[in-house]
Length: 109
Length: 112
Image (cartoon, rainbow over all chains, first blue to last red; front, side, top):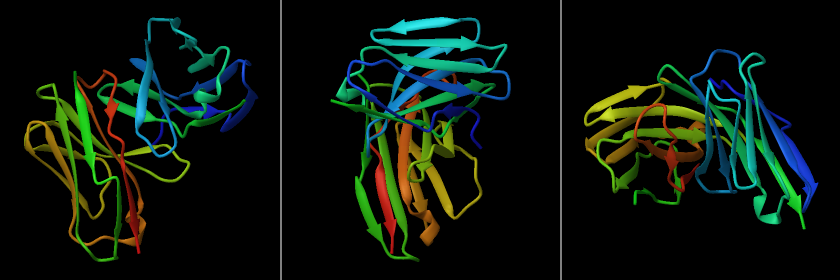
């Protein structure tokens, strides 16, 4: 069963705009991870944020975690056409990792 | 550096035929290994995971099985494929349960 639920299911923006994707979950977690999947390929890990962390950055990516609201967000700044992909959150708790259904991001040139 | 190889990339099989998908990892030892299935436009469903040679845990009862004959080799099998087995199968490894998983490029399986 899936733990995280991404919102929105699909997002279409213009190149240069920021993209924000959200992930909500239901139970406590040890960490939350974000992955990216290009069409027809495997997933690629982007960022891991632990339950005691509130924010992490990696290049143009910014992830926040609010454990009181059981939610996380992934912000991609200054988006590029190459950022077009599906983005998944995965929650980890007690030897159990669960992936959400993903947000499909389309960045138009 | 570590790499993961998964093959074949695509496979078309008739209903009732057997299946063997192979996944190997290089550059690391004693990895955790995972098999997932992904339906079109959906998230990942964990099928099997393994923490060591011969140790397989099944998440979903079905006509698929998995084996780990060597430390860095993970095989997904079926004796008789069903139409519902169609999908995108992904193999992944991680150094520990709570660490990032690293995925192969997947096998697109179509059952006719």
